Length: 198
Image 1 (tube, rainbow, N blue to C red):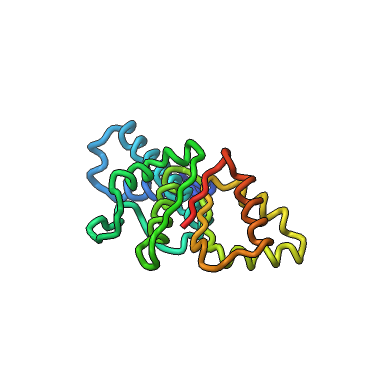
Image 2 (image 1 turned 45 degrees about the vertical axis):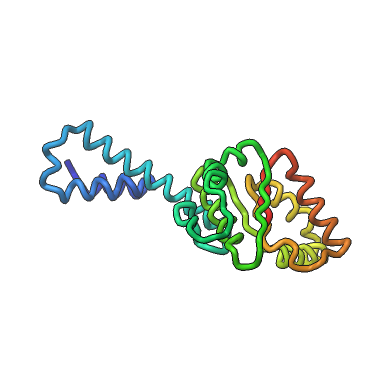
């Protein structure tokens, strides 16, 4: 069998997982002990894993999570009043499937943003689209969007995410205009998508 043309075809077909798996098999002298079907299954598995990892990386990139957080790293030993059963229930993402919302409250520095990002990361792992926004920056962006005519498009974009994380809500008193903006965002998502507010 001509090995280099096969590898070239895998590159042309955009099958990088299969490409790497086949190259590794070519370099492994013990691979001959496996049948063709077993070797081919390993190659297909590698491509599937590569694609799943690529999709996850893309979802995490679009989510723009402020912190690299995961549910596995949530520390329950600190006296913050975290209900482990409730947190694990949220990590199952059933609330996202049901289009429910989540509110995380607590004093400054207790880890609300971390927990929100961890739940966002878990949502990405479960194939949900996620977007993280800090509320003070959101209002600045919306004011600019109104000025340059992008306001409607931005609202439509926000409505498409399975989970919208609004972090740092309540750090300042809202103006009438800001309350209207939040109403529009939340109204577009009501009973169709989930929103998490800290």
